[in-house]
Length: 419
Image 1 (cartoon, rainbow, N blue to C red):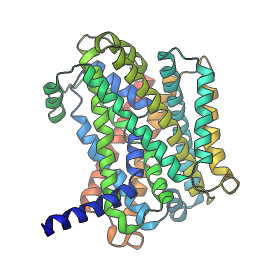
Image 2: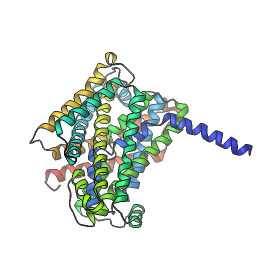
Image 3: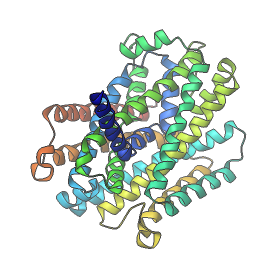
Image 4: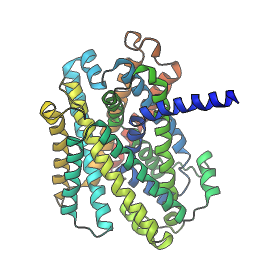
């Protein structure tokens, strides 16, 4: 009996510590399922049914390993990724990396504002007034709330992804077929369209900004090295959770649009198209999920750039810092939001091209960021006993090669007009 009591006491203690570190890993991973992610998963389900689900397992492992490396570096060194790049590679390299990150992030923020606009249109809501309302809350929560307040908002938004589970259930899928495709590459094809879509599936989940954000958010949370193993568990759980919801997004569309051979080009079309087959509630839940994903993506990616600027150029940047001490941090966050809003209002701007080249730039930048992660994670003077093992290094290098080849494929296909 005493052993049972001791077990539960020990379990309770570990659970409380895990809950204390909860946040960075889950929020970063979930934000990868932004508007671009929802659109990609919708297209995957509509074009190829369940056949691409097996890739989610590989993507989950890749996301978990890369995010864990960043989290471990942040906790052990207590320095942001931008700080380390500046200290070890100088201000010129820092400036180049920051400019590339800023451009890539702006493209992603614009894509998320396009997602917000599409989500609003599904409920026949006026675009400009509601976008301005969203912008007001974005800037208000970030500038006036502290770290804890914003983390609770982000975790609350992450919880809303449960809408996709209900949407999938209402679509009445073939669960046996879905689970078989998750475990085995049953319906794999080797044509260019299938390969491109598979690459897009990879690119929408593993992003440069995600590496910066998990690093910066951990620093802002002030997690200490004695809680490292708990944060590693939280990062792994976040990677699992993001692709757990991705699974249901794909299933919801595959079980309605794919089996009826209905083509789509984005998440908003998917929400409308599943309505006749899965009903009004499934449509509403899918649309709410799109708005939530777009909102969360826009805020977190904008925050990433603000964090990165502060780290690269040595200014103060923290959600716990008041505006008068972090004017540049909050200013850069707000400027990105406003630029994205203005670009969305331009009638002839090609959002498709913005998303295409943003994804290409992300694909080129990500191996560079992984290079920095590997260098820092293997530096014994920085990491001590917490350096990388060989498996992590080989896996990260192989992943970088795949991502570079994938990015080249995407850019060339776009230039040739094949996507």
